[in-house]
Figure 1 (tube, helix red, strand yellow):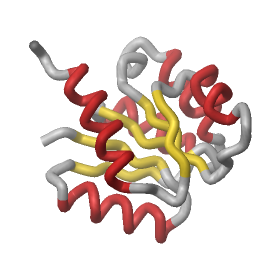
Figure 2 (cartoon, rainbow, N blue to C red; figure 1 turned 120 degrees about the vertical axis):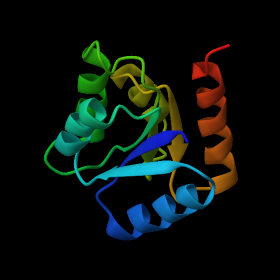
Figure 3 (tube, rainbow, N blue to C red; figure 1 turned 180 degrees about the vertical axis):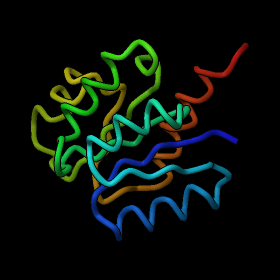
Length: 125
């Protein structure tokens, strides 16, 4: 069962998305801020990280850069989740180390497609 680390400070978003992912067969670990997300990327070793960009303590941009800088977690795909769908945000997320970008409100079918694509690439051939 693939494990996803959901780093999201909004309780409603966290609850809704985690329930929908669990229902589709994923194991979900949750962090409520960027610092906890970085720590859990090491302790949980998820197959993929969904990273909100607007987080308390350490923002998603910085947290992603830290995850990607650590040799133990650098290969974990990170999908940025943000309500800030402004011009340049996708580029900023990719520059921070995110592997992809998705906007809020979450369109589940689109997000699941992105998740599957990364998990298929990661699976041993």
